[in-house]
Image 1 (tube, helix red, strand yellow):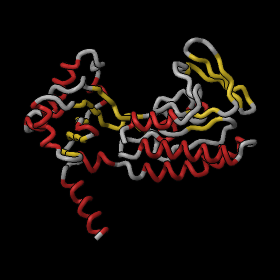
Image 2: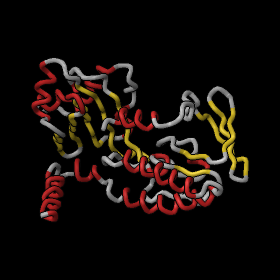
Image 3: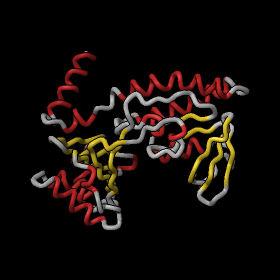
Length: 277
């Protein structure tokens, strides 16, 4: 299921007005006794009984609980989509096939995934320093594409066309991570979920783990409707080991772009196949 469709399913299940858009949090203040005051971008304030930081990698809520900040994971990703029209798309679609294609080499790779209705989702991923993307702010797509193309000089043009062809404007993403095993002391009235709690490099499970966080937190709150502290304690008791286990499985970049790429990933596939046989 596409994330946009899943998002609509979840939002459509809520009573109207449950989610209030356009209320970006600018600051948060601990008022004691488990209560917090949010200051919004328009200057308005809101008080909370239970505050859940589900606000991603650069969470404004996390500092209430932890001094941890995301660090660069050594990988920069450039993302684009190829729509269905035109000869270029037909050639790319034939190369990708019915699912996902990975073209890997030491330090870099191209990955393309076929999505619903034939749209192709493409990523260039590179082991580069964090300043590699300096100046690529989205205002000059041609400059971004040219810089990516230089990283893949000598690659087959059938592959590089997947990321430098006439797709959507490229989006640059520096990949960051929180320390593996990130946790905090129980703090009244506030907790975290998803990337705010356990940001890791993409491994195909980030959205799944975040949704599980939300489901488990909801279950705990429903089980303790008059005692939110009991609910948050129960939720965090299970969250920390679950997040730590997911982090131990996230070292994809070593396998994908290591010195022996693509042979390390092939060996992993072979080992998994033998284990399942």
